[in-house]
Amino acid sequence: MSKTYKLDRLIALYIFCVAVAELMGSKTFALAQIGSFHLNASMGIFVIPLIYAINDIITEVYGKDRAKSVIRSGLWVIFFIFLYSMLAINLPSSTRFLPSSAAYNDIFAKSARISAASLIAFASADFLDVYIFSKIREKFGKSRLWLRTNVANIASEFVDTTVFITLAFYALNLSFANNFSFLFGIILPYWLLKCFMSVIETPFVYVGTSWLRANEN
Image (cartoon, rainbow, N blue to C red; front, side, top):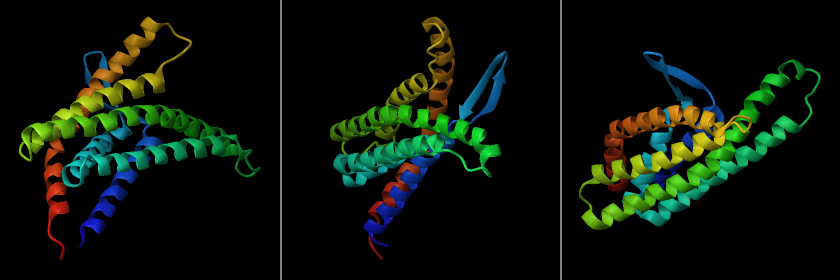
């Protein structure tokens, strides 16, 4: 299998993760309860760290310019999902679909806000991930892949989580103090969970890098 076909498959997985995070990320599920504190996570938790891992793999093998090109493709996917969600919820429903119309519009209205928030968070965090990864690689060379992938991911995921949660869930009808307390209670555990997922996915970066670099059959 050529490197081009391998890269195509990796990019397909990348776009899949982006689409899943946008369309299904509005659902949260319970993880644990610590005293009166409930730890919840979005369905995006399983794919978002994978997005950053793929960024690192492509940056490591093809360089930061190619990685930035893939990120821009992901941004276009988010933008198109946002536009199509707005179209879907604003077109009038047929008579047969009316019983499901309210639920459909509610789901995709949430997806539209999530897409808008993701577009800004994704742009700032993913480019930051590539930048930090590249800078650490310039300093240490090809060694310490585990270090640059985790430092880059942890820093960029903090930006991604803070920007996304704030834009997606800030309530304009509530006070700043009320919003801060609520949002911080989501941002901190969600970021720490992303960090944990990134750490345990570090072997995937090594495997993916070796797979892309392997000689063609």
